Length: 251
Ligand code: ADP
Ligand code: MG
Image (cartoon, rainbow, N blue to C red; front, side, top):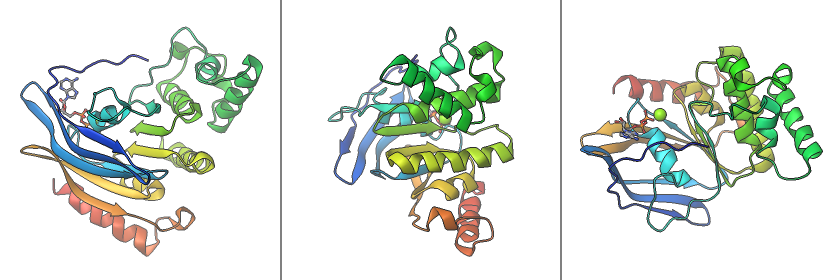
């Protein structure tokens, strides 16, 4: 994978792994004069899904990068992370199937079998033997999501994975993602612009904003309504949705 950035870093940050949480404490990141984080703290529950919402430029991607160890932090050796980036970052010389098989361990035939199964689950059966340049943008994106879900890492970081996909597909993939996640229950941090998406999947919802001195947490909520009970029209869901909506449009 290609890691661009990180320019003009002058940060002292601490990310701690505890039994029940990954604690980000006093995270400071700046790019030149641009202070993105200054003494920023956030707790991420372990083996749960935290969804992060917030306007563009508030530091969501940078936060994921810090968690992945792409921006070094003191006292934190980043766990093996599976990072689903905003762009697909597939290996151009491998077919979709092999882009998945390459992240798996084991015998070649077994890896290809598991990769094939995942492509089928993601409605990508027809893409198996195609190369990235032969895929539509949405298909390449789904292959990248499939790869991220397959890669066996303690921490799953997703940066707006379903952005731009049509609504019906988005909904099916979210349900599939939750089903898949429930089998492994690894710590997941999921950045999205969709309030509904966040409400359907999150154990914890965080809204970040851009303050004068870097990113701020504007809203933080543990949401423990069972996922199977979450749908539009459910009073708790609708109330939460309008609460977060009102907050986001006021920024
Ligand atoms: P978000 O994902 O919430 O849209 P980002 O984390 O991508 O926000 O960016 C936060 C801020 O950091 C923005 O002002 C952006 O311009 C800046 N930034 C991010 N990455 C870099 C970089 N590699 N070099 C310089 N500035 C950066
Ligand atoms: Mg971003």
